[in-house]
Image (tube, rainbow, N blue to C red; front, side):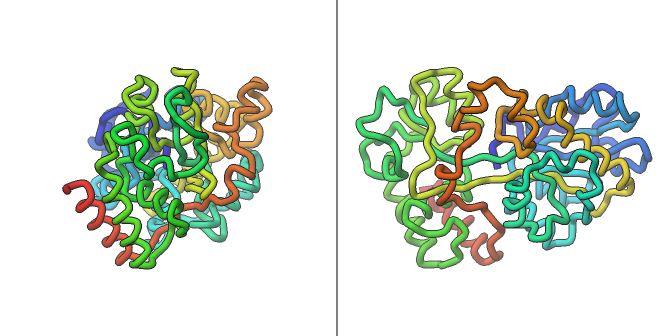
Length: 355
């Protein structure tokens, strides 16, 4: 989830690309055979990809962005804009499926769907068991980005965030799911636990840690380590790769206890009236040249198996971008927990942040 490269915007309501005459906010439902309303995360698609699609097909894209999955869900459910397609994270995707908000798609009919590796269709089964709704888009891990010149020992465990050795120099994610997830893995729990005692223990561990935390951030977490204002931060793998590009002293690790393997995916909403155009757009995203363009814009791990072979050997061998099975063997995909557990997590998060 990832995995947002958005700036400090809550919603970008009026992004325009070639062929886009108006923003979704002014349009309501598209209602046009040649128009799709697309909802995505910030800076999560190369603008040229949209321009090229419109040039090739004549189908216009009205495009809107959100920063987090929760903000996207709230805006979608408000119903003011009838989105045709949206991209969101694993656990939010499951929620939308269970609420009947998405249409089934026959991905086997796609011309380029075969470019998505079986491994990633299997990842998607954690929240879309029959692969009927979710087209894998980008994936990655959550781990620790750290300055190797400023740590005293090898960084291979989440314990480095909790042992008090780096008080004031730690950045945690400003996300209830991500922060609870890594702490649950540190304590030996599943990051999808619904056990109240385990969740309470996780909360108490975070309370003890709080005085050591310099800040709870999202995208800025990487920047703080790059600038030397923090020794380490919990970040998404794509952010870690860019961090190393800015500062060669930085390293990234998925701790041995395991972490979250996240997967963002595209789906077609129940409001979509032009399935043919929507499926054409998703199939287009699977095409070799399009997937490569998106990867080079975002630098998160792509599920498109044709992309890796087109990259320089240095990138193909980069374990941050393309981790091996050993690095992810103890990882889990986040799935939707029950409403009671979600409410408990949100209440404890508010308490943690307010105290």
